[in-house]
Length: 140
Image (tube, rainbow, N blue to C red; front, side, top):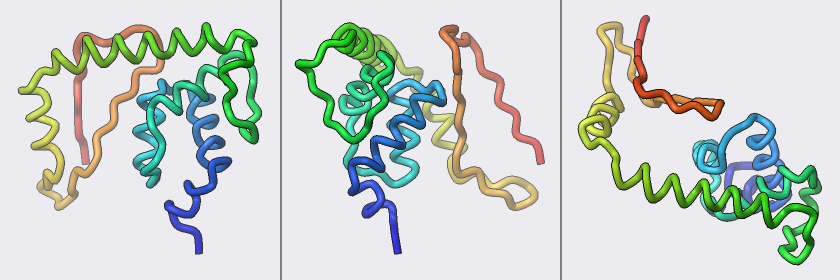
């Protein structure tokens, strides 16, 4: 019987999942989140960035390791992804609104009047624009 550890233990399976997340239009960090939710424990954001850069230049083979010496526009795509990731780390993580984070922590495990338990809340923005406000509504 296959479980997450054996599935993700095969690098080609992990790479196919990374390709799937790339084709969905996710960022490398969103892809990392999705892979972790599926049970992947070993993949790092740097590995996802490397594969996303390769896919961006239309190199979709997952059976071959990323070769940094091959240059088919890969290095430029890799730099763009790394720059975006550094910008994310430096700007967004240092300025997290702790009150907002406390709110999200309180939501985890919230039980509604009808007995439903909130276990996950996901917000995805699939374009370049970043919202200044997010309205969250939970209806049952």
